[in-house]
Length: 316
Image (tube, rainbow, N blue to C red; front, side):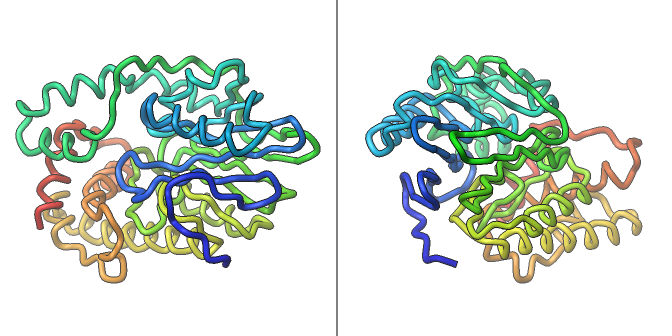
C-alpha cells in the first residue's frame, strides 16, 4: 500500500479521484471523496456542519477544476457527519439508498443542537456527548431530501468513468452503501470501515456488516477510503471484519450466560483492538448484538442510556 499521509485535506488517490481526510477520525471527524472525469464530478458525502463542508468545498474548487460545479452528490449513509453539509452543494443531484432517505429525517441537526444545549442537565451522558460533539456547529442546517434513491445496486457514469453504488446495509446504519470507482480501482466505504478507530453498530445485523467487509475485499481495488481514519487497502476491511466477528463471539457467550450488557462490556477483553480509538463504542455494539440475539424481544436502548454507558466505559 502507498504511504498515504493522514493529514487534513485533499489527497489524490487516482486520476482525478480524491479523498478528503479529517484527522483524527474520531467522533464526527469523517472523510469524503471526489471523483472527476473531464468536466464531470461526483462528491461522496459532506461533513458534520456547514463551516467544515464549506472549507472542504473551497479546497476542492481551488484544486480541481471539475469541482467548480459538482453534478452529483452521493451520501454513503444517513449519519449527520456524512450529510449535514448537503445544502451547500447547490445544483447537484443527490443520490442515496432508499433506506438512507427514510433515515435522514430521524436525527435532524436541530436535535443534535438541542442535545448539546441540554447536555449539562444530562449527567455523565451529557458530559460525554458534549465532549465528542461540542466542536461542531449544528445551527442553520437543513438537509434536503435526495433527488434519487435506489435499492441493491446503481451504476453511474462520471464522464467516462464507471461507478457502482452498492447497497450493503443494514449494518452500521440501515442504508449503508459503497461507492466503487472501477477505473480508479478505489472504493469509498462510508462507515462500513473505521480505520484505527472502533466501529459502532447502530443498526446491525452484524453478519450483514461482515459480508459488507467481504464485499470490499472481493473488489478489484487498491485504495480504500474509510468513513473515518486513514486511507487503507483491503487489509483495513479484513481488520474490521475480524473485530466484528470477535465481538459477536464474545457477546454471544455472555448473552447465553445471562450476563447483562454493562457487565458483558466490562468483561470483554479487547486484546489487539485496545489500541483502536473510541473503544467505548463496544457498549453500543454489545447492546445492538444483545438485541439481535433476542430476535426482537429486547427493546432498543435509549440513546441517553447508551451515551451514559459509553461515558462509564471511557473512564476505565
